[in-house]
Image (cartoon, rainbow over all chains, first blue to last red; front, side):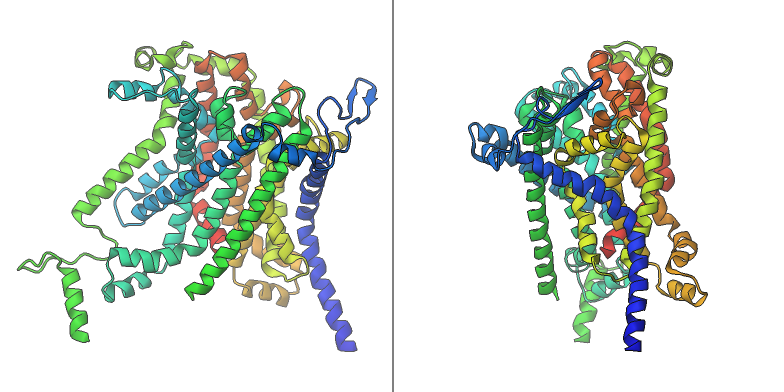
Length: 316
Length: 302
C-alpha cells in the first residue's frame, strides 16, 4: 500500500510537470484551432454568409439570422448543380498540382543534395546560392516571377528570341497551371535539398566503404545505402511537402491575383475566394470546402503512415 | 572466394584496364569529367535559383513605370529613385515596423511554448502524449478556409482584431506545432544523462529544462525562432483579414495593396520587394548552418 501510494505520488508529480510544460501549446491550439474548427464545422451545417451573420454597426448589434441546413452544403458542393466546375475540377487540379510539385521537389532536391554531398571546391558557394529561393520571402519571389512571366516579360522575350511559342502564362488556363508548377517547384526545391543533404551527411561513411569493398557499383550503393539511410528524413519531408503544397496559398494567390484565374485555383484558394473574395461572403460554403480539404489530408496521412509502417516491416 | 573479391576490387579500381596502374580515386572524389559535369549542373541550378531575385533587383533600378517591359533600357538610366520614393512617399516604414513587431513577437512567444512542449514530449511519458503529437502534425493540415472565419469572430469577441497580439497568437497556431515537432527531435539528440545530472543536483524538471537543456539546444532554438519569424514575415491571408486599418498592414499585405492602388507602377513594387527581402534574407544566411542541423535532427527522430 505504501509503495503504491509512493508510486502514484511520483506518477502524479511527473505528469504534473509534463502537463504544465505542454499546457501553453494545448491552450493556444485549443482556443485558436480546436474551437474555431468546431465553430467552422458548425458553420458548414448552416447557410451563414456575410448578410445573415451577426455583426455590429456603430452601436447597433444585429444578431445572427442564418439557419440550420443539415448536410445540405456538403451534398451541394459534392453533387449539386455545377458541382464539377465548383468542386471536382478544382479537386482534380489540386491533386495533380500536389503530386507534380512534390515529385519535382523531391527528385530535384535529392539530385542537388547528392551533388553537393561530394567533396569539391566551391561547395559552400553553391549551397548558399541554391537556398536563395528559400531565403527570400515567397511573396517577393512570386512577384518577380509574375513580372518575368507577364506579357512582354523576360520569359516570353527569351522564347521569342529563340523562335519558340510564347504562351500567355498568366492568362491562358493551361499555361497558368504550368507557370504555377514552375514557380512552386522553384520555391520548394531548396527546403527538400537542404533536408536531404542533412540526411545524407548523417549516413556513416563506413557503410559506403563496406559496400565498395563488396564490389557494389554507384547505383547499387545508391539503392542499398543511400535510400535506406535517407528513409526517416525523406518520409517526413515528403509528408510535410504534400501537406504544404496541398494547402499552398501564397503562390497561387499572388501569382494570379484576384478574380481573374478560376481554372488555376486549388481548393484552398478557391475556398478563400468564396469566404473573402466575393460579395456576399459565403462563410458556410467556404468552411465546407475547408472541412473537405482537411478530411482529404487526414485520410491521406493515415494511409501514408500505414504504408510507411508496412514498408518498414517488409524492409526488416 | 578471396580470389573473386580481389578480382572485383581490382576491376573496380582500374576500369579501363590500362597497362599502367591508374591512380586510385578515394571515395567521394569524382573523376575529372565527373567533376566538370557536377560543376556544370550545380552552376546552372545556382543560376536558376538566383536569377529571379537578381531580376527583381534589376527591375527596381528602372525609374519609370513601364521599364519592366523594356529591361534593356534600364542599364542606361539605373538609379535608386524608386527606393527613395518608396521610403519617403508610401507607408513602407509603417508596414516594416508592423512586420517586425508581429514576426518578432511570433518568434519569441512561439519558440518558448514550443520548446516546453517539445521537451515534455521528448522526455516524459504521460497520458495524452500520442494524441498531442498527432495533433501537432494535424494542425499543419488545417486549411485557412476552415479556421479563418471562426478565428475572426473569436478575435472580435476578445477585442484582438487589428492588434499585434491577436495576429501573433494566430501565427503561433501554425508555427508552434511545427517548432514543437522540430525541437522534440532536437531534444531527442541530447543525452538523457544530462537530465540525470540535473536530478542528482536537486533540480526539478523545470530547472533541468531551463538551466541545462535549453542552453544545449540553442542551435535548435535558433532554427525554430527563424522559422517562426519567416512564416510570420511572409504571411498574407490572416494579416489581410485581421489587420483592418491601413496603418496596421504588414509588409506582405502592403505589397498586395500596390496591385490595385498602383496597378501600373511595377517599379515601385519591385523596389518595395527588394527592401522587404534584404533584412530577412540576411538573417536567413546568418542561421542557415543551424537550419540544416535542426531540420535533420527534427526530421530524423520523428
